[in-house]
Image 1 (cartoon, helix red, strand yellow):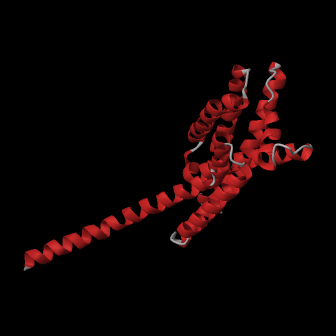
Image 2 (cartoon, one colour):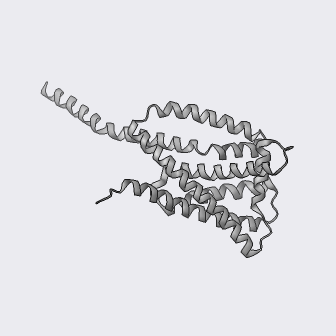
Image 3 (cartoon, one colour):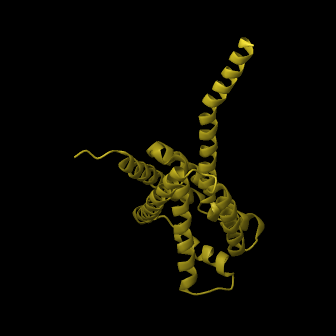
Length: 231
């Protein structure tokens, strides 16, 4: 009888010890899922490129689906973790927006210095038509595309910050190189780019800057909040 009680006690004790680990893994998984939701703009663009389905309708559908699933998961996340994720989203918005702006600035400077003929900012008009329709014309179409571009870069930054924000510059560079690989794989065939070497040079430069700025800024913002201030 004593032996049976001892075995039962050990089983219960081991379950109690294992529970925090299981809970932590579950929370980490939910965090990664939330991070993935912020890739919705990129997902809708890929669907549009490969299927020709309206990017506007695809984006709306993806966002609605992400909202529904996200809300279901959000209710199961502890309140203290919810507060942390909210902070990370805020930091990611700042880091992603800043990284996107410097990404574009670095590309512009490179083109002006080297005299490259490839002009990456034509993509704004293409994005705008993908959202508003091929028949849409006017400066507002390019402005709409520019907003999508900035939103895309910013939300990619949020996804990174929520999932990997504490890891620093090298993680930011790895994230940016994944985006670079996706771009140079998809864009040349989609846009029928002739100056492929210039596209790669311009996009690589931009993504290096994006990754460094994103990785540094996200980590800096997170650690600033977590580091206690001593009087």
